[in-house]
Amino acid sequence: MSCFRLATALTAARPLPLTSQNLRLFARKSQEFTYARRQFSKALNESNIVKNTKPAGTLKLTLLGACIGAVAGSTYTIYSRISDKDSHKEHERTPPKVIGSLPAGVRITKRYINPKDTSGLDIVLFQFQTCPFCCKVRAYLDYMGVSYSVVEVDAVLRQDIRWSSVKKVPMVLIRQQDGQYVQMTDSSAIISLVASSLHDKRTDVGDLAQFYPHVSFFDDDGKKRQDILNKYFLMYQDRTPKNMTKEIEENERKWRTWADNHLVHLISPNCYQTLGEALETFEWFSQAGEWDVYFPKWERNLMVYGGATAMWVIAKILKRRHELTDDVRSHMYDALGKWTAELKKRNTKFMGGKQPGLSDLSVFGVLSSMEGCQTFKDSLQNTNIGKWFYDVKELVQQNRGELRRERIASVEALA
Image (cartoon, rainbow, N blue to C red):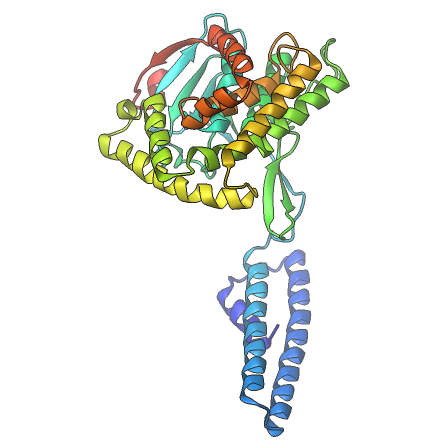
């Protein structure tokens, strides 16, 4: 570190209020300043000594580079600490956001209405039709016969979620008893929240949502990350179902986690491994999501060609990140083989037993996102996943509400 680094950072930083926390922060920075000044003086003295002894040119450049690197690195570190006052916070919990009303101008593209739905839930789902995580949420809502509205978000421009600080889908707004809406993100957390609400209708969904706060942590690279606490847990509280055992709960969490942390990461490297396959995949996305109906032609083309090109590049990055070989199909086959082998071992039709459980619906949702792609067709031919997949699909479609396609100008029109 150096005095130059500290001076630059303090000049660029905004003034901090004189709170006790900031006084402690300033004291710490003063210590860093003293240390930085000593290190800089030491570096200058060493440079003068070397100069007097007339070292070789290479050594001069090495010392100069080391000094410049130390100054630059120290400047960045101090500036980062000053500009991000929350960077030191770990395990900080942030409850789900609550908004007073549905955002103005949000366009409902379709609704699923089930006359038999007794959940009392008013849900608006923001999604990409073929996003694996969005497919997971829809698979669960459809299987449970829950009615919900859908906002189809432009995968490139994302205009329908401009109102939100979170720019990811799936995202849901669920109406609380007081008329306000709780905002939930993360497919697994959404499913767990809705499942908890269906089990315990006496507790307001907004109160149940408090069990799923965002929590901050630092990963192995020292980068600050956020995740949702308890997202694989259902909040039974003191009313656990009689047929629910600890073993069943743990098995469900295990395979739901596997779907999120492993299976879903195999889709992009497979479906976009060549530019041609990426374009073919996005053409199917356009057809499945009815992009030509819900978006202008120029926007639809931007989503297809721009999205396919971007995902083709991203797929290569994901392939390296997840340490996949060039034969990416084999990784998909191995994963599906692991799933079907577990079913065979348990000698059950579904992982949940006689009926699909949350893990069945999660894995089904992930796979259904690529149902029209070549990867899925190859998987049907090279694995035993087909029978289980279509058995789940049949039940999901049987319980799904009636589809009503519409293009409502804004949510106010629903009133």
